[in-house]
Length: 292
Image 1 (cartoon, rainbow, N blue to C red):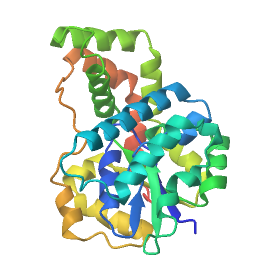
Image 2: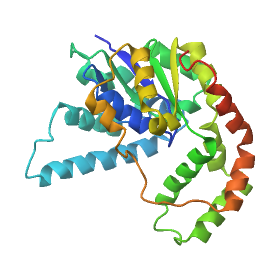
Image 3: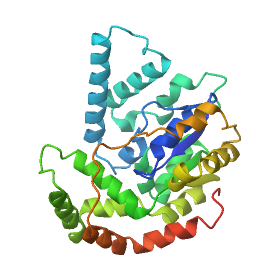
């Protein structure tokens, strides 16, 4: 029996990993253990399939090595098997030939599971017709969007970018600032893509035209008002989110980066000017009802 879906669609570096962990704390929700499936963005050509296959290969190899070298195999449980199986599917088969619902077959027949789903920030980049195709597959899913201050979110994404370049550049404040300025001044493709991750009103409008249930949450509330997050999620999916495990999760750092770079005043000023309209747009969002 097909489950109801919860789809986190971003934004990148805005708390989507935390929300995934929080949802998975509920006994009636089974979010896919491979957090970012990258199914729809790959099917629609927004992401090269070779990138997905390389990632799946690395994940698959890591888990096989883990089994081969483990003295304790207690981690080999249904959730781990689901994770490994999906990596194998994405590695061995062209994504265009994979039925999306087959990626959730491991929980289809578990009676107490009411919701399944996943979170892939690149789903923020889908256009309206692509979102309509998504709905034809998953039904009227519950859509969750995490929203973060555009400047802070882009700085966090830049840190993630730097972590990927650890072997290829000098690690000084000056070199990081110079690289960031170059990206901004050249309107680099990375900058354009990051600005698309900040188009909250546009993407909320798109998804609300296709899906009946859309919730957008503030990243700041993860820190300043966690009870509001729990209350909104409870209302949104009609499940109780008041357990101690869920509440204690807010005290943990999830998906944090080791690199602690903070841009200089010039870079920050450039970002604030570049993202001024998106900052105003985000501020206007949170004076409206959060559930559409």
